[in-house]
Image 1 (spheres, rainbow over the protein chains, first blue to last red):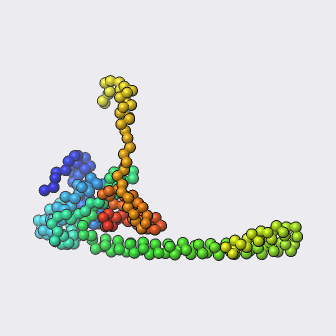
Image 2 (cartoon, rainbow over the protein chains, first blue to last red; image 1 turned 90 degrees about the horizontal axis):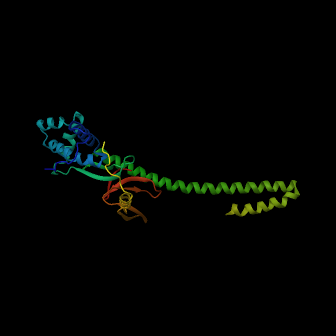
Length: 193
Length: 67
């Protein structure tokens, strides 16, 4: 039997706590993994695991008991047909709590509570997102290389254009010619580099 | 409303204030791909790629949701 919880009710009153825990359990069975405060995750764990145990039993009485907590019939169906059978060979310990540090805003310690064996959709989603990230990494690396090359070629073309201008000027004005040819001489090594 | 019965002496005030100290955070060094990072014990940490973009949270070698 789990240790009785210490301290005040979540939300202030017993009915509010029941509502909070029921909603959290519903969200957990819908998504397979939810982020909440550490306190709520700790309170949710025995509630959710008891519901899963009932789902494993699978009879009408168990279904009615679960339905009195989880009001969404679709979630009850998922719980009895998918989540319950998945834990056939596991006696308790259906959920996992991982701490993820304080929340921005009120510094409340947050945690992720998840079903131990993930939903099929969740696995696919994570795999695809991981591959997308890997692909993004590769393309990002290529892009940085490409950008460098184009910048260098642009510099070269600008420098050569400067040289051409200064040549034209030398023909017209002899006085400025010496300065600008000097500029051109400076520009050329850059162009080569 | 509660009201103080006596004046708090300057000495008592200053002794109390001098006891307020900063604590060193309990963090551990961890090397990922040649880069050193610091992690808090018993807490999921964010995994980054080579560009420093956050990818996902990880704990005990297991992925724990998005960053």
